[in-house]
Length: 207
Image (cartoon, one colour):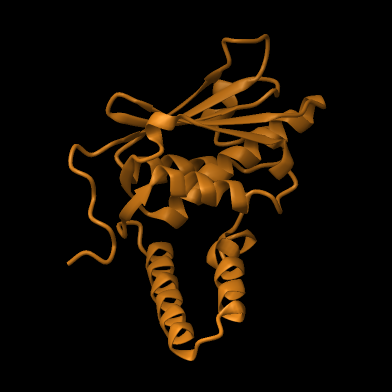
């Protein structure tokens, strides 16, 4: 399973550091440092608390996923598709923990592919009525209910990543489905379904 240290430190550091280095005006630089500090404080709170949630736009979620998966060995194998109807949707989310949950699923899909020598992981994010669906499709051996209930993946994993993902999805008021793919002979399908609030959640800096 992945640890937060594998990727969380890069979530904002590269982009914001580049901005700081390019910024010439001291007043603007000071303001940028302040915004960076506030961002980091929010990130640390999210890491330390399951209940810490802020408005997260789906387009922002996708941009972060696309940017952060590249250093992983499976990064280039992931094809991300975003439904245009979901781009402007916002959900209350613990960004760091939700990202880790999604990354756990992607990592597991890549490991499943490795067992049969296949490639390719599909990540589809879409709106389905009042739900936001995050679906991961792999080309591995398929879903094994007995192995999953034993909290083991079967390819060198303890299953703790899946347990964490289930917990995070539940804490976000969502559901997790794991099944065989029905569009081809083999492969597994993991579907994270999260509720979209009828009233958009307030941004973190709102009073």
